[in-house]
Length: 306
Image (cartoon, rainbow, N blue to C red; front, side, top):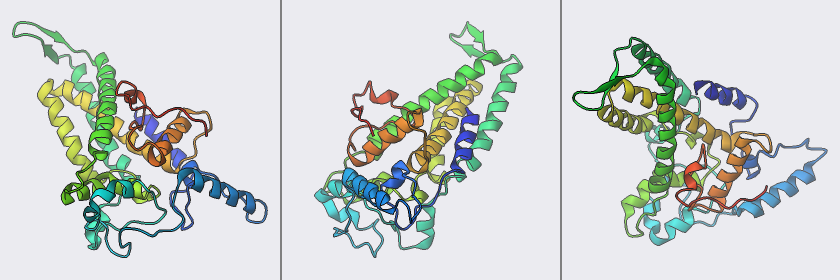
């Protein structure tokens, strides 16, 4: 629940948030730099080994002009786009020439809890106090309804969170990893803006979480769908759980790229899983906060030790 988010926020304080100029695949596994005079050679070997492991190009003889914004170039790659976008590079990406449009595509991680957690807490308290009044009923037929006590709120909340994990999987698999037709310039451009740029430059810390403006579209659709399906208080209770799940999703995604989870922990396994999704199995491993939905949809990445 919300306290989990604070755990991630506090844990971020122990890890770097900016990717230095010499950023390599070490940062995905957070191989801590050693003192320059003691373990420099060891660190260089590790970097070379991970570069070999992750197949990150050391040079960039590319199909695009990196001096110009990429948003309007990628559509011209056509049949070469899919292979190109899944060859990660260690360099910043500029999407738009207009500085305002470019700034709108970047979001610092802390804006996610700052924008959405107050809504989670307010609506959560509103739903709980409304249910506590004892006036909320679920109509099963025109002649029969059942009361919904306040004790049901945690169940509705967790139902919303679980529902979000399914939405998370579906968006990642069917929207972010759609394969745009090679002849369709606009769908290729849309795919790159939505998710392709993240796979092309996975070390870009400014594009690891959803901008609140873009996220608000999905959040609004989620809220309206639930309130159309369920009585308002029940629908909002489920919505609060789903919104909290989204915040945790964005925080975990950022942490998987820049955090340093303990070996053998759940977050370590998620991090290893996500790294394999980025660098080896781009057509599988779509779960971020959980691998649960990868199992019934047969998109599980084979187990491998790191």
